[in-house]
Image (tube, rainbow over all chains, first blue to last red; front, side):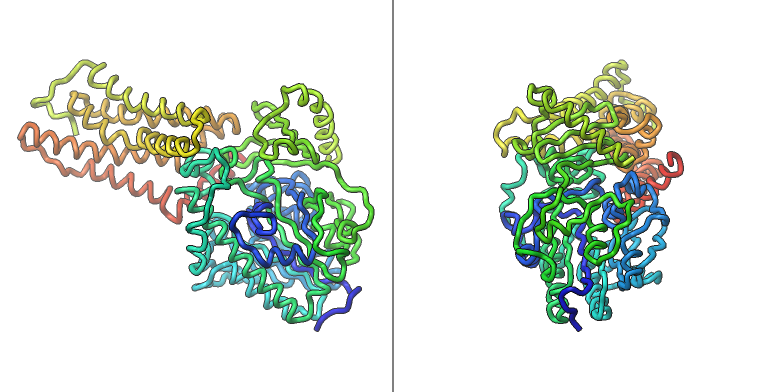
Length: 426
Length: 193
């Protein structure tokens, strides 16, 4: 029971699917209520500028696990297969005495992996690995198991709670990856009408209901009026919040909260009508930015802070290892956020590289981008010309300034920065 | 399924084929261009109304116009090949447009493979069924107009409708089309990876 301050911490990593950075009530959403996400933020550190290096499920998930960019770990889209040579943070943690569980969405192409370092591996393969909201069969440690009468967010949380109870003597690492709130964005029945009458006037002015059925958006699989899907998305998020609350309550009840690092984040953002897009992929703020909260009562100085530093999905693996006192493998391309949690002086990145690889048949061109705190520069691999945005003046990336006097002035530096990032990866 | 000869005048090609076929094609094209960029509508409510209605009409012009077009061709004396071809002109124009459009993202070969997506291929299969529906409608109208004994329900249009329904089920309705989608992706991987 319980662990004293200074011991190796436990880890509870909660990964939501497609949750936007601004879809938490503590980020000012007009109607969504997420008291447990808010609680985490008030008791931990909320990173206001958190990003993924590829805004797509499979590459981003692999980046969380390996600390590597997509062009390094090789999962470049939803078609390229996971390479079992890839090392995840689970291996290093297990070698350091951790008990580890992977529960939830794996969703990387190919067969299920030989996931070294975990003693529990509970996932699903139906619908191409996307799973189903209701009655989703699970692969429990290799055994396919029907789960009639279940709602997946709750079902996965049940398994997570079982693991925490079982491994409470610690140290342990729980990786809980929800199917929610990916399409079909289905909430549990008791939340189905929660936001039926919510005012949606905050949605972007360019959207229209049937844009879900345009050729570019149809592959997102969410046909029908966008408003209905958006309400469901928020209701499904409330269900995630509710299950997060169960996890936090259990950590409290077991006396584990003090020495457990809870990381709450998402695999990518999501556009709800911005640029007439439903989906992710393109290097826009709506797609690249993610919620990112870390709570660690025994190790965080001045909880409740909101930090402006740019943190990335590739930072998670080195951060967990650093917090566990394990040597961070040199090949990891992320940076440990521990100095930020401890509020110590540290040199931090001022820009980052974003990659998107061709993912047939999705209608998004392959591209690379570099984002600084001020500018976003995108180069496409197709005939689409490059784009440059002033993020501070134009956070919705509506005005490409590349041909403007300001753009021409900034462009060489951003081009050089992009080359520099690409060189550093190669 | 040949055009009934009795009572139906075979009009000149332009009148029996080109003109009727041009109407849905032009409607689809104009709606496509209008709904591409409607920023000029300042009022948000009017903009959304226009975009939603425009897209409904756009889909109808592309996918459903054969229901009207086929009988028109029939009563203008078009032969069966002309009627079938006429119903496919707008959908095939859409296919060409899509191949050209997605070529900005994919190679030429991939862009051609894109035709097998449920949306594009499904649109072509819908026409098979609508041609069957159009034939039934035409026969009913013919019987009413000319009072001649024409067999309305024969196996050919029924098979056409069944093929379309079956294809649409597999491509779009079976678990929301995910099974066809993953099959399609497997085919893509086989060919291009």
